[in-house]
Image (cartoon, rainbow over all chains, first blue to last red; front, side):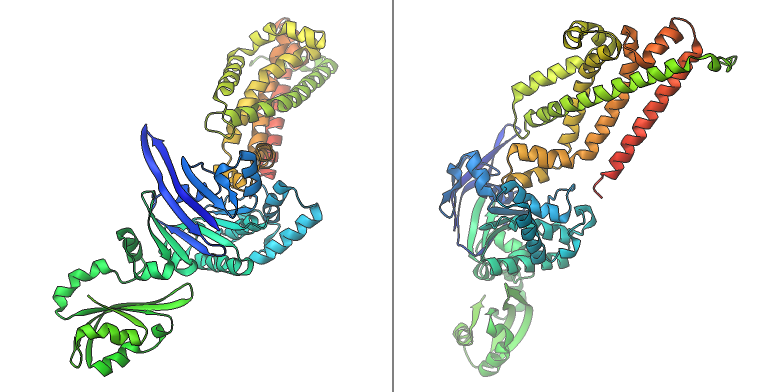
Length: 336
Length: 225
């Protein structure tokens, strides 16, 4: 488990004190994939670098398991960091080394294995990320996705208990991003590895993460299970980040209502109901005439969900009774 | 030069030219080796102790940097003369090939050190950060990251230094340093034997060309793509 308590960090910028982190507290359970999302300048990058103390916070505490990293000396930190993997946006591979030698690098630093053991471990890691055939190439000969696979293999070399991902997919095209996210999900499952990632891309959070914290101006403004935060975003920053993903937004609905002239329902389907003709069924029973306004069907970490915005005229029941009727079918209904 | 008598070339004392060439090569080889041996650590020290770098020591850096600048701003001819006592102390003579090597090294080390500092600073900060994230200690970062990643640039710096050293060896002829420069001064300048001057200059030019193309080839061979 990772515990972050009251982490605060300021920079001085042209003589002015700028807050990068303002009393940030997080609790990340073992084996979860925890996403930190925010716009650029929100403090994500500082936050993830404070987790392995690449940057020293001004105050606050970072614990990984039983290790209070913020109380460690530089030498103790160097030891501990060998078991905290980190993956970078721009891969940061050694250009002078081959793929295999890059993966071997952290093993050499740790100096715990002999040459044969290191080679065996490198083979194992390259197989895990699917790069056996490229082991003799140099980074310059690889595609972005392949480079990130090397970065991931390297980060896993010393069997870390935490993997930190610093915008790991931001430099990749959408398809490659999907394959890297799938690889990370796979690693999380196979190795029960805790993953902490920062991103500005809500899609990464939706596809990969179990939990999410939204960072804005150095503060955590919203935090919780991804499915809750995505479907019921509370904070304006979260809502605007979600707007880019096509999820139905509360903020947008007000303007429509007056012009539509009927009550508007926001229906949220999570899991099995998303795949069933619930609206049709309720519509027939309650004599609804439906005017579909907007809708999405998507997945949050393999859980299907859908959202519909619909104007309704109900002839057989009161509109106010609809939430209960939908709730019986496992669908959340809000009358807007 | 239009009425230069090419037959004079036949009269040139070729064995002496050969000997002088060997002397030049010896001076160059020994001083280049010593320069790299001393200048590489100096460059690493400059790089890591500079403000904002891996092991920032602003005062130490300021002192080293000043020393390097002082040595680099002295004209080499002056350095040659100023260093005579030190040379006598170290190698027992201030003339000949042996006498030239001390001032050559003293002149070239700050030059090469500064080049090394700049080359090392070009190494991608992200890669250094990644190695820190993996728990690398400073010596590991220097030996396993900075120097290998900067290898093409370091070879380039050594090539530039070697070419500069060729010029310095020629200049050391002024204080009786031996080699092609010495020959050019004694025969070409003091005895007006232009043909000797022409031959030595041609040989020095050839040497510089060879060094540069060898350096370029090495850089190309160890580039990482």
